[in-house]
Length: 118
Image (cartoon, rainbow, N blue to C red; front, side):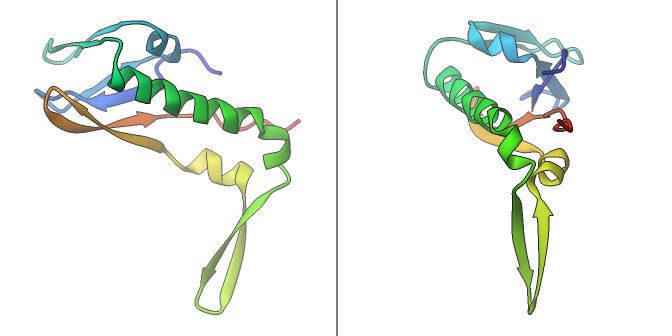
């Protein structure tokens, strides 16, 4: 995986993105909004459990990269069907997880790297 921020959510105070890396989701995460200074602590519990489950799903998709390179999704519109390769689909979609943080619903966004050709 690429280095840098891969997960982000909108600050509950100012709405600007708060980003953090995948490795930070494996511990009690202490974050601060760079825009307004609002502090966040993801402690052990359901929120961190959901983030970890989400990351396991992302890792499973990455682990299936070789099979996904030869797989496609069929999208039917009316009487036409278009086959979209998973490889292309995964580079164009943003994965999101809806969570509650500080009493507000937030969307945790995962930005994945494009799948590489083998």
